[in-house]
Length: 502
Image (cartoon, rainbow, N blue to C red; front, side, top):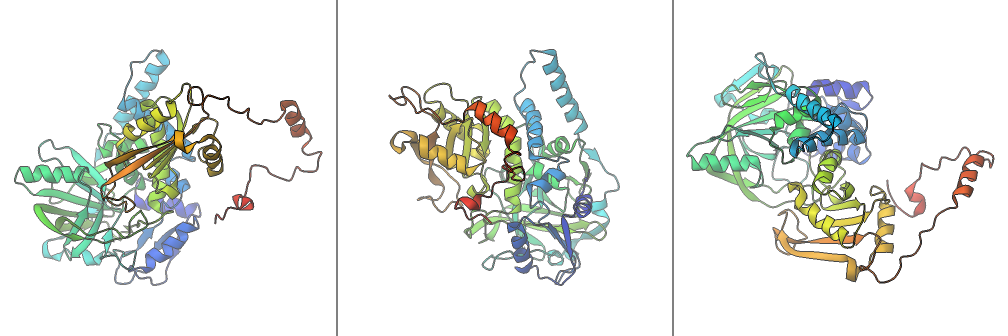
């Protein structure tokens, strides 16, 4: 299994999922334009070997399909991600085993945790080249600018590493950074994120916040850092659980922070509390340009990198984007955890077109009236990342929630808007959501698209249409005899039914 960026690139190339581009390309707009077209088509990852104004190649779109994300996590199918979710669910809320088999399963998970413990590297590849002081020049990095009205060049797939100055607990997150000068960048993080909490603590203690940015890491570590699951484990341990073995870490050259030893680049710096600069606007995942916010300023005093390093990047925007593919994979990981939190939920899906978190479709094994509403309310409070979900659609367990045609049918045939739609007004909301009347405050809608029972309705529900089982079995047996054996019924082109899906 690939455990660094280079290994993953090699794996993609061997599987025909990487294109090397030797033509001269501009990191200003051009790389993003090429990559966006490839993302829309579900195309391969790209490695730009000749980037204007830079001596380092740029890798992008490596995680542009769910298949490639599965490869990064040493899996073949998205369904396998649920097995990982089951492990995390067991760690999050361990239950006393009632059977020997349950005790054995829990023991296996604990053994996985032991194997996942980070290791130490004393000759880290990420420090093969060391640049310090005034020689640090961030302009040597091939930072991209994705959209014409973006405020400047950005880092998008860097691991932002900080530490609680009192407890020493590290936090690893993925936040956008904007280039401000040759040795400074602003970091854009929400106030609830770990890095922001660490900065507030440093300010309370009258200290600067040490901060490191790891660029070009094993994609599996990026997935771990992007998983906001409320388990009392470090992101490094998460990455080890994801990969089956511990992440190799090393100490920064100038900071008391651990960073991935196999990263391509490491940037080391500090934030002085209260020192901010305007950050933005930039194109974001909502499909619009965001606003301008005063954001903490990082002063970098050291940059290290591997020999002949590769710069990894991506960009946000209306799906499909790499962040949407990551969200689809995380959706599978969340599923067992959500089932543990809300027992009646059989499955749930966050459609990419709904920005991977704005709308959720959940299926339940309905047993009593009002259960769909209960499930929707429980969903909103189950995990922190569902706080900003605007719409929750609840359907019966026999509906394929990943088939929009079945979901639309359930809404159309089972919903009376006056009875089955409920709205929670003025709840805390995503400040990037311009649809809200008040920024940071918005409503949520629940839709009960399940089959109704008394007293939800005072009349009998219609009997569903079903084939005669004997006739259906006979047709199965005679299908080739009819001369229809060459027609594969599972391969349905939705465009034949009036859709326009490219």
